[in-house]
Length: 166
Image 1: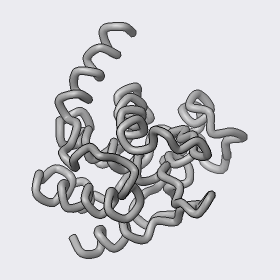
Image 2: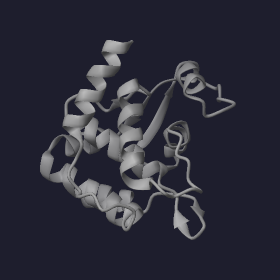
Image 3: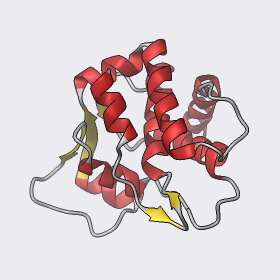
């Protein structure tokens, strides 16, 4: 657990206007939320509608009113490869995408894959909450007045709605 807390505490993120970019923390919060509510059931993280919805919910929750950050899930999904616990699984080895568009990333990658140990920690409520706290305290503090509780019920409902619409 200490290793992953350190990894989450020291993500490679951009700075703009004196603030840390929220993209990677928002993505990781979305992954934790989806693991917690059972939508993500393995260390393979697909760029699914559920993940996009969870990312957008966390974006709204933590970054409203910050004009110079426009989180796009494609950027952190791709750039998380700079972190030791995240890798992309290519559909065809050797190819690289030319943009961070969701459709482009889906064409190039089957999924992202996180360490199995990290996935197991995300499945346990107490450790998931500790990881969530590191992300919020390090990158998103003072950006929201909403508590730290997770969003699994909202995400589950949004996921079901996405499936009904599709």
